[in-house]
Image 1 (cartoon, chains in turn brown, blue):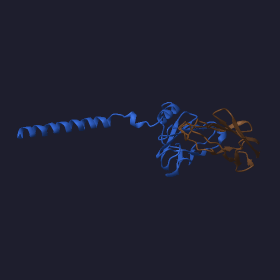
Image 2: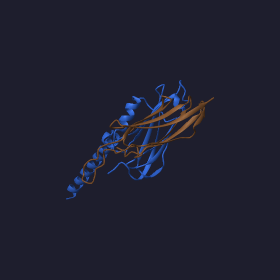
Image 3: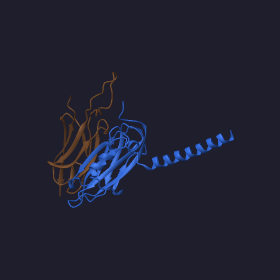
Length: 110
Length: 156
């Protein structure tokens, strides 16, 4: 499968300690439910991103378990409290174990 | 002739009474076969461990009418100070009319700062979406919303 590059946007690059930083992320994925059938009547096997997590400077701030009822090309928007500067790493894990990883960074002052 | 007719009428009356009594009992008894369309109720029970959830603190934003069930925007926010002492740990979202009940589970921590998240979900038909939030002290809160779906998602 071709390398998927997630689109990630933080609402700010620099934040004061304690500020809430908003993360918006979109990733291309079919999120195939395993319930649909193709033209010849065969079930299309399930293939979804089943988990998502976000770490800031190595600490997990938010995560989610997706089921088949999450739309194709999953979009997720959430916030975290700025505590320390460092990389903001977003990881999506496919049913088959492959990972899609995207990275931004945040600078925390004060 | 007259006699036969009367008897017939009486029989009918008895029959009707009997039928309505059966109907009454039928409506009072629980009907699990009709109530459960998917595993949504079981998922909630497993998530809460059977604790009753109060209808408070959870806000579930979904459109009244979704034209396209393949991508329905959903925002969930839970009122909480999100400190080490008091925070939201998990939020379960289920839909009672999809082929499968589960939609998504979110995991928060005090580092989240706020328990608010937005994503896009699939809804196969008009149904209720239910969010259940669990706090670090074990208490559970819930909110639900019906969404009318014009074109269903999740389907072949």
